Length: 156
Image 1 (cartoon, rainbow, N blue to C red):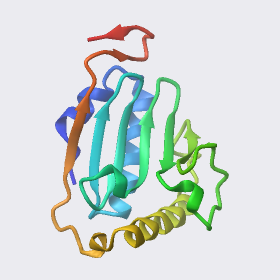
Image 2 (cartoon, helix red, strand yellow; image 1 turned 45 degrees about the horizontal axis):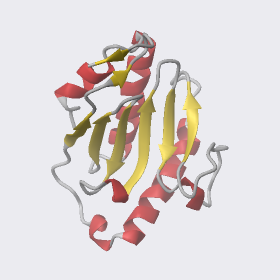
Image 3 (cartoon, one colour; image 1 turned 180 degrees about the vertical axis):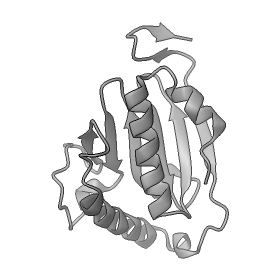
């Protein structure tokens, strides 16, 4: 699935290294689970993408959040993962993530098995997700009017 054209526009203010890392992580997920939809938010303090077999955040199995110095790769129900082969950060009720500074150091094999478990968790919570999504979409769900971007300034 091609990214929504607005996604590249949203990440343009970020350093080229962060832009490339974002797209590499995105492609990692969409290649692994090609039937997933990409849900995009251009938020106040980050650009975020969630991956779901539906068009709803509640069904998302993983996400990417773009910041100026790194990208977070997270699991929406990370606290429920049993095959946690990579130490995840987070103290909330459900969400867990890792900081990613480069795709070369990203633990692809370990994260891949964690993604498959996260997909299973999502499908158990919503039986309808087991049906194959033959036309995945890259959808912009929200654009914040005011944003903080890498230059540290708020923009409109």
